[in-house]
Amino acid sequence: MQFLHMVDSVVTSTGPTESNKMLASNSLGITSLLTFIILVLAWLVGFASRLFAVIRFESIIHEFDPWFVHILFSSVFNYRSTHYMVEHGFYNFLNWFDERAWYPLGRIVGGTVYPGLMVTSGTIHYILSALNISVHIRDVCVFLAPTFSSRKLVSIC
Image (cartoon, rainbow, N blue to C red; front, side, top):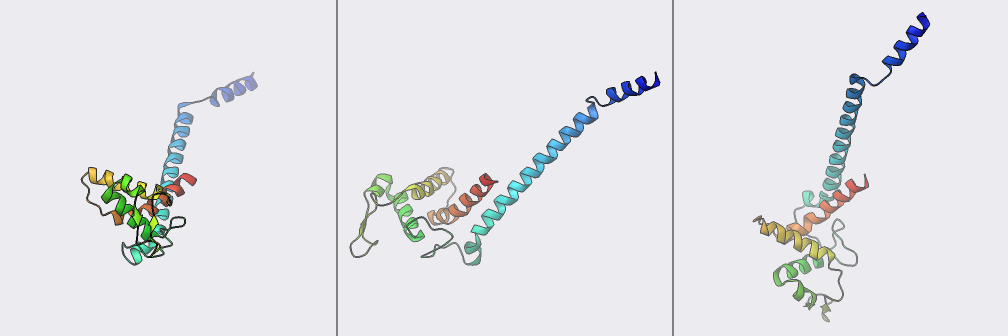
């Protein structure tokens, strides 16, 4: 009889209690907090590592900047193309004949460029201008690479 009483008390004590539920909830909260902190730190590391050239020198675009190179094009061309697109519009950008590129022959930009980087930078510049935040297009082009690299690092995590 005493043995049955001990078994009965063990069965009732192993069921879900308020303290077990609270402990599980608290554990979930700590896990979520740690995940958030790790993602924020990963974002900061990714952003800071791409800002090395900006911090060491200044917010300029070098001729061949390994921190901001797009496939097949130097960053100076990306900046010039984005600046032209912002000043003259997307349609004129697609029909732009750049006499300064591939000198002395020139280059038809619209048919020979992948405009994703320029359109993204121009859109960000347009949104910031619409919000009355005055930012030069060069700064948007310089900080686009650190922003996207840190976002990619977080998406990988």
